[in-house]
Length: 137
Image (cartoon, rainbow, N blue to C red; front, side, top):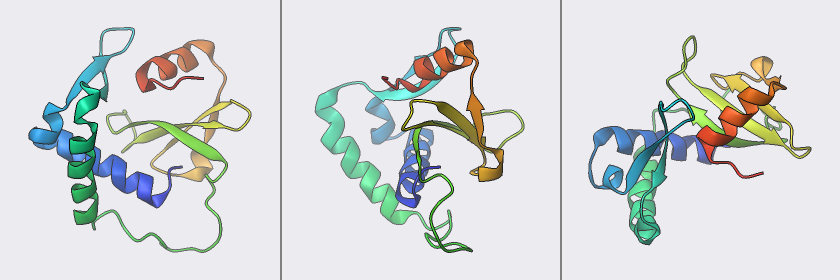
């Protein structure tokens, strides 16, 4: 899955969007192919520096997502995967993250559980993932 720093950044982004303050004003929410709400994107690239400053400040505040060196040692089970999308509104899970590996194969896992990582082989599911995430192959 994502690194600890990426996890904190994703959490901070979601919290700032939820607060609907200045940070959220820099973003618009996209829609997927079905017209359902999708990922947030920066509306104006000139706001990136201001948004990054607010995001960095929120990341510095976060303490409730755990320790960087939680209960174990050694490399992450997700070290060979690059996270490309995150959704905390998935039925049956607290959150789901999607990944791509060095071979260009797509995977998903729920709640950061490496035992649950599953390769995605369905072309429609991959197309939806790419649309929702904005990931460019």
